Length: 82
Image (tube, rainbow, N blue to C red):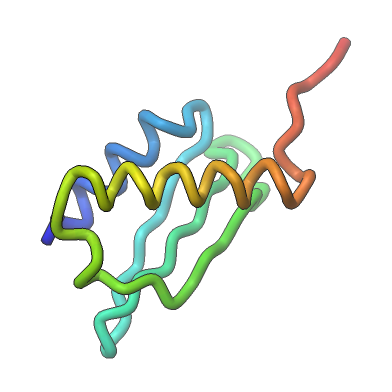
């Protein structure tokens, strides 16, 4: 299993400039929140992720791809245009 601090750091690298908050609940499910560090605007919150499924680097990469898809699908995270 990956440590939450490692997971958060990897997610922040993958979704920069967004910040990430990872919260573990009593039933060992994970909530991931991606947000703008300055404004606090939340772009994505996903709850109920199984920590047991994050045992390998490949599983973490699959999570990153799933979060990237969700982020792009929700329409909130759009490149700023001038």
